Length: 229
Image (cartoon, rainbow, N blue to C red; front, side):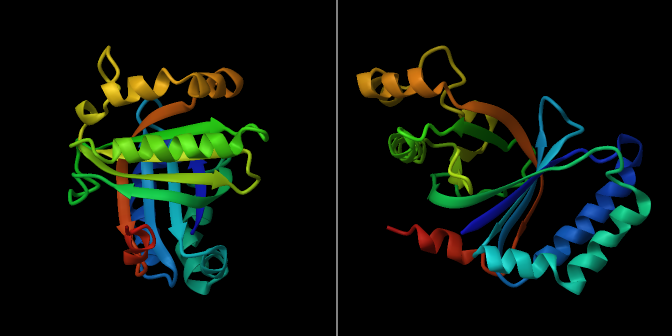
């Protein structure tokens, strides 16, 4: 699956205009062929800034939507009203390589207490396979924690980064919030191989986000089906 991400900041003075515009555009996206999941994530430490995360069955479906008359018409108010004027967007492309659901998978993803960890990790060319393996192991361990909703791992289209998006029922359900690591992660972290990878690549960098808006598309069921046991 293909994912496009935009980091953006609406013009603060026009935020009240941006909210209904964004709602309308997300509603259009919910009916787009090939759309799986669209989210607007608000960055907790920078509440004026957001990530738009759009997951599609493939790049072709995303490109067809972007070129469609419906998308052009839906996006027109942002240009007409200058909703992003002076605040450039940062665009990146990713491919989904792993997905898991946890015990809290049935909750409403826009619930006010939901916390989303947005984590990037630079890939080293000679260690990329090991890093992806480590990310997969960590996701499997997280998926057994009671407050874990779901997690995705993406590889950048240039194969230079991993992006992990982990959703928790509440901030307290993040297993690393205390002073002590959970035993299974402490055991993993004590591995000389893992320590060597971290020493060479640096630790992943994470940001807490809230779910500002979440819209499932017509292909929503393909996400869990693709990674069913």
